[in-house]
Every structure is written in C-alpha cells, then in structure tokens.
Length: 289
Image (cartoon, one colour):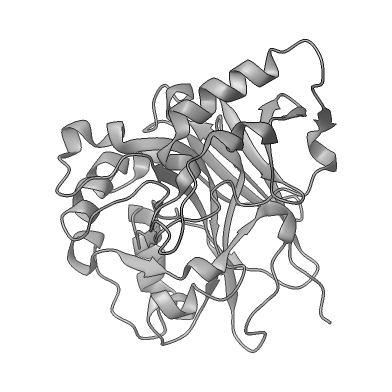
C-alpha cells in the first residue's frame, strides 16, 4: 500500500497516477491531550489505518479521486520523533568524500562504524512539492539521494536478525547538505533540507530492500546511480546500530546514506529523485529571491 499526505494535510491512497482521498481514515486515531506522545500517531496505528483505508477505498460511492500530479505532496510522516542519518555508508562515496576537499573541508572522514550516526533537526523536513531554498548561497550546497526507512514498532537493542520487523515502510529521501567545517547535524538541518516522499510505501510491498536502484538527475543529467546492495551497513544493521544507543519509536526516520556522485545544485535547478518501487520526486531549487 502506498499512502500520501497532500494539500491541506489530507490523507490519500496512491493507485498508479491517481490518489483516493481517504482522509476519513484518520478519524480512528486515538485522541491525546498535553503532553502529546513523542512518536507519530498514524505510524503507531498503521495496521488499523490500512484496514480503514481499504474499507473506504472499496466503498461504491462518495470516493474522491485526484490526479497525483495535481497534488501538493507533503512529507508522508507528519510528526517523527527524530531523524537519524547515516554518513558515508557507501564505499565509493567514502572514497570521494576523502578525495574532494569541497566535500570534506579538512574534516576527518572515517568509516561509518567508527563515526557512528547523527541526528537532523525535525524542522528540516518537507515534502517533495515544497522545493528547496538554498540556505547558504555563499557555500556549496549538494544533493544526496537516500533510501529512507520509517520505523513502525518501538524497540531498543534490536538485533539485525529481526530488525526489519520494526519497519513500517519506506520512502525516497533527499538529504540536502551545506558544505563547510561545521558538524553534519548543523549543515544538514536548514529548513527544507530533509525532503521525504513522494509517499510512504508499506514494508510488505518491498520484496528485497537490499536490492533497490537509486537514481537522481539534475536538469535531466544523471548525477547519482547506485543500488542498496552497495550499502556498507544495510537497513537491518543500521537499525541494530541505532537502537543500541537510543530507543526507536514509531515514525522515526532512518536515512540510510548516499552513494557517490554528490554535487552542487543551484537556484532554478530541478532534481528528479527515484528509488525502485518507492516512486519519483520532482524537487525544485527555488530561484533567487
């Protein structure tokens, strides 16, 4: 099942080039008062939501359909507790980062097993339709395509052997990056620098998460192309690693790292970001104001 959030926080079931409005499904979510949960309510109740979506979509009347291309697509996860990111998790990207001073800025670039993971600000999350505004035009700003896993079940010290049982689904990620000497968590957290979409594909739809093609083109020119089998630490290993430090919660975002080919983007550019089975995002770099 592929689920999207669109326009004014409406909820939809993606079927090919169409979206069925199933916003009524979220009425089944439990109500909370302050203090609110520190996880995403929809993802925590995804099984019940999917059952309600099926019921609504199969009804014979009152179903509204939209053309997917006409919608403003929001981040498929509204309230993630945290965004966890994996640096240099493809061998060829590790090599290019060490060789290109425009990437490393004299920072030490070590293997992911040594440097660990890092967190991005939740305020950096946007959907594909929002586009990206260059945060620091005085710096190099790069695109980084990434497979994103959305955690569906809470856990701590999760073994890799059953880690994928904790995944609700997957989406395409774009980890925009300001190059410079600061820590990654700062340079990758400007507003709009974590683009998620175009929708959430539930985990049962993906036969082998370790064999997905990733490709990003800028203005039609392919810049990055790889497969998730090239990950140094795959999704299961990353979940084991992350959960050894902190509890994972429903809705947490796990960005799995980017392959080689990262490069600078400029105002007016259009990025086409696609992963096998997860859809394609068209993301515009806003022109200079």
